[in-house]
Length: 399
Ligand code: LMG
Ligand code: NDP
Ligand code: PMR
Image (tube, rainbow, N blue to C red):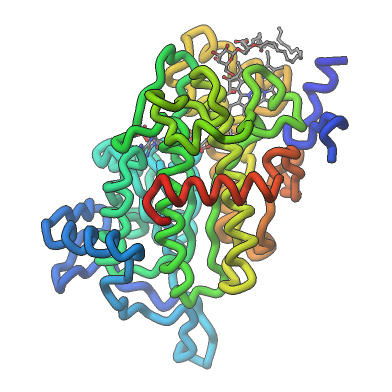
């Protein structure tokens, strides 16, 4: 029975209890200096730092360049035909796994320019080359989500590049299932929630303004979620389960000093911290939707791309787990998807004209057809979403 249940495609398994081109886009030209597209744009000049400090003191980050970009739809094309310019998408953590596969899938279409926002420039460059991404279709920019300064610097650099922002994909994550003690971000937040949630929270809050300025027909902000954060699924019931509790630990800054390193205030558990961070990701997407969809028309979405059992996410797990996990998912749960397939799925959420609905958590059935999935009670609780939003704003210095 258990196996039968497990063989039902992962994303559709519910526990009833909780059931509830193109006018081609001119490539990087920065301050009149032409940059090769795949050359890192890392601007850490003191001038930018000053601007950042100024912006932070003033509670807002304003666009520092008025991009003279090609309009999204060029009507002067021959015979009055409308052509769409290349979309410009930022993908965090595009140096491996799902992020890389998505970057490849989008870059290959020729319709997208991918900004790979990565903490390790060389790794990202090698990764892009190894999967054969056309070099005119990507740029690598430095972003370390475990540092809020780095996030702000990324936003500054991105604005300086003059590119429009048509889609943002918050994909990067760390998972520390075997850590006995918590690790911390530059600002002292527990690393998994600090990186996966708080770093992305600040990034997406700042870049919302840029998305809002874009004239691209469909602008999207996507935050990757997961089945393991949803306790209405079998996978979400494998201990330790996600649970934000009353968020006393989050309110205390996840410091592990005077407050717990865990959102719910409990003892540190790396696997739980990851799952909690995914709940925050899904709640954040919905809160964005409630606050900004109507006003901006931006599509906010999350997804479970399937179990991509071979990615770097499991790098810190024990070797036996890494050996057995892929066949377990392939042959027993049948929830396995290849990196390539998962990349196509996320690329759909970025660019498929049929996936424009906002506030949705997408999943795919066994025939790889997308459907709107239900999240757990906790991951769809509007009160929790508001609380996560408000506490996170304070922690990242936006409130
Ligand atoms: C916690 O343990 C750790 O404590 C924590 O530190 C962290 O690492 C965390 O999530 C990460 O894991 C959780 C886990 C450890 O504990 C459990 O899973 C307890 C069981 C809970 C049960 C809930 C659901 C019950 C449903 C039963 C369904 C049975 C499914 C089949 C199981 C397989 C049996 C053969 O657990 C583990 O670490 C186990 C590792 C699981 C992954 C690999 C399992 C391999 C099984 C063998 C696969 C062989 C594949 C061959 C395929 C060939 C086919 C021809
Ligand atoms: P990978 O480890 O392969 O990719 C994670 C990426 O995040 C890497 O590029 C990594 O960079 C980057 N990253 C980690 N920390 C930081 C940081 N501080 N700053 C910037 N980038 C960082 O894992 P996956 O591809 O599996 O994970 C991608 C997303 O998919 C995650 O959000 C994960 O939660 C989600 N997901 C994964 C599933 C799976 O089965 N694998 C299932 C469901 C969801 P680097 O290359 O330098 O390490
Ligand atoms: Mg899980 C329907 C079955 C299913 C699916 C789709 C997943 C996905 N897992 C399922 C079932 C089970 N898992 C069962 C029955 C077990 C107990 C043997 C099990 C165990 C397990 C472990 C120990 N699974 C894991 C782990 C991890 O360390 C991974 C994790 O939780 O990371 C947070 C994981 C995962 N299982 C998944 C997916 C997608 C993961 C990767 C985590 C993620 O990105 O959310």
